[in-house]
Every structure is written in C-alpha cells, then in structure tokens.
Image (spheres, helix red, strand yellow):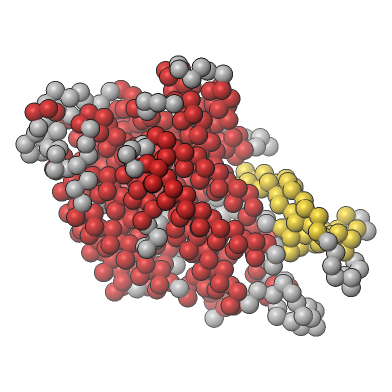
Length: 544
C-alpha cells in the first residue's frame, strides 16, 4: 500500500503539523486551539489504522524499514598498529521499522492519544502550551516504538520526559510540582543508567567495519542489526575472549559484562514499568496529573518500560534473562499482590487505579518470565489491554471529578441514577480489569498465567491470587461510586457529553473487540512472537 513512502516517519512526525498550526492561533482562542490539536491527533490515528491493515502477518521480519546514516562523529586513531583503518567513527543511523511487537503499540499510542485529546476539553488554562507539549509527547512515544538504533531510541525516550514534566507540573492538581519533580528524578535516573548501558554496548558489540573502495573505516554503531549480529554470530569477535584469529580481543563481552548490562537495563526499564520498589513516583503522577495526561501515562508510557525490557534486555541478553526467569516471576508476583492489596485499602479512586496499574504490570512480568510463546503473547496482550482499560478508567475518573470535584469513593455513591452512561462504562472498565471473559483483560491474564504455569506452576498459582484481590478492589470501587445512597448535591449532574462519550465508546469497543475476537491482535504478532520464542530457546540451548 505504501510502497517506498516513509510511512513510519510520517506517522511519528505528523503531530508537527498540529504544532505548527497551533503557533499561528492566538492563545486566547481556546476552541480553535482544542479543535486543531484534536484533528492533529487523528491524522496519525488514521495512518496507524492503515498501517495495521497493511501489515504482513506471514513474516517475523522488520517491515517498513527506513535507514539513513544520520550522525558520524570522528574519533582519534590511537592504535598505530591498525594500519588498514583510515578513520574511526561513532555512527548513529536514523533507522525506523516495526514488527508484530511494536505494531500494536504504535496503534495503541495513536488511539489513546487521540482519545486523551478529546478528554482534554476539561483543561482550563494555557491551552496553547498544553497542546504543544501534548503533541511533542506523542512524537516521542511513536519514536520509541519505531526506533531501531540505540541512540535514536534514547532520544525519543528522553523526548517523552520533558513534555510529561511540564504537563504534570503545570496542569495537574494541588501537589503537581512535587509529582512532576519526582517523576523527573526517578525517570532521569533510569535514563542515565540506560544511557550508560547503551554506551557500553555501542563501544563493544556496536563495532563494525566499512569499506569504500580502498578505504576502510572502523565504526561504533548503535544499529540494532549490527549489535545483534555481533553478539550472536559465531564468527564474530564478540564471542571470543582471545584466539589466534582475535588475539587480545578488546571487544569481547564476557558473561560478567553481559550480566551487568542486563541488570542495568532491567533497572532502567523497571523504573519505567514500574517494578517494585521503583513505583513510588508513579503514584504521584496518577493522582496529581490532569486525567488526559494520566490516560497517556498509564495507557502508553508504562508500556515503554516493558517494551524496552523485552526488546533490549531480553533480546540482547537472552541467556541472562532466562537464568533470571525465576527472579522476574517473583518480582511479577510481588507487583501483583502488593498492588492489589494496597489498592483494596485505598479510598481515593485515583490511587486505587494507580495501585491497580502496578498490579497489572506484574502480569506482564509473569508473561515475560515464562519464556515461551504463550507467556509472551499474554504479556503483549496485557500491554495493549491494560493500555485501553486504564485509559478508559482515567477518562471516566476525569469526567466524574469535573461533575463532583472529588474522587474519594467515601463521598460518592448512587451516581448511576444521575450518570447511567458514565457508570455503565465504569462497570465495563471494571469488569475488563478483573478479567471477565469476552473482555480484553481475560485473554491477556489467561495467556500470561497459562504460559508461566507451564514452567513455574507454584509461582503461577501464588500470582493468581492477585486475580481474586483484583475482583474485590475493583468491585468495591465501582459499586461504591455507582450505587448506594447519593449526595443530594449530585442529583442534578449532567451525564456524559458527546465529546466525552466518543472516546468512552471507542475505548470500550476495542476492549470488547479484543475480548471477543482476540485474533485481531494475535494474528499480527504471531510470527514475531514465534520468532522471539525460537530465538530465546536457541540461544539458551546454545549457551547451555
């Protein structure tokens, strides 16, 4: 369909059209600013839907690849014996591509961002600045799921931090500045660890040569294809400590270094996921940020942690990841039970949802720890499913807050009488969250636990207790809000407006679609997941 057209770059940078348009609209014209921003988010949504329809399901290869040499940094030639090399460079490529893992996350990003733009109608100040930061954030998120060069990935990853900091700190609630600072500190530490790990990888496994006529150049590349080939090709210098072919090899990456890098990436992406005990920063974001911003944070940004852990931590260091499978599973169980138990103790609805996100991200860890095709499918299903459910939940919470000025479940009750539409979708989101069959939450939890049960039945059974706790705290929150005695002050409140109802219906429809027809998600990812499973199995077997 797209031929040689750079569709990925078009999707990733299409929000720039909205940014440029916003710059020419006077800051006091709120309606025009909101309309322009919303239209700008629907452009990549339409393109992402076309991309999803055009994606080839019969291959695990990267598709729609765009590859251009971007940055070359000359280095000193410090080893005089290397006479054949005329030049040394750091080389970073603008390399974009997607597979069955990144495709659903690209579409999820486009969908949730567009729905969050509709939900942002409740923003009451500095509309122009809000939407510019909002659209910059969308560019960063798209880039994270498309980048195939470590440096490019890092740039897009960092691009998401700056807009989020301002979106939280300016348009949030009472303690917004504290939440924004904590967000930046934790994620900044994670980014620093990730950058150091990437730097080590580039300077070892990123080494390659380039010959142009009689001129040979030595390059240190961030290209993932180069790095993967060097790490796992038997003829590569990176798998030999020293031999006749590679005497005193300076590029050899031993087991100790691989373990160090794997743990660094686990911590870096674990902060983003988040994995206990790196979760505390997230609580402030979920409670203090504007609901439209939290829709994106909970629905997409948390998924960047799991995506990075799988794409870099597990795929580049599969032997270490498999050896750490039990530890990953235990961390997942801790996330599930800790999040579920504390969610049950909360009376603030936003905190219930925050701890619920921690619990549900534990299910992703269980799916990854299974290291089999079923578990990996469950993990990816959970990323998409939770993205939809949490986005819908925070959309509803934002609408409830606009009408009642509180999200304390002790002060709410009986709202189904005045807000049947809102409470109906609240019930739908709650049922999906606890894993009711025929909704997206069921298939993701079922696959993740089934995959883990095949390898670690005892751990899977303990983790499954979290499903029971989830049912308790979800039903407690939803029922307290929807039924029981109602404060007279809420009796005349207005149900959802059209601009609120549209994103609720859209998100709810995808939750039902995945639950009823999971093939819509499983078919595009099938070959990629099979390839990942085979890759991990073969490397682990070779390592053993």
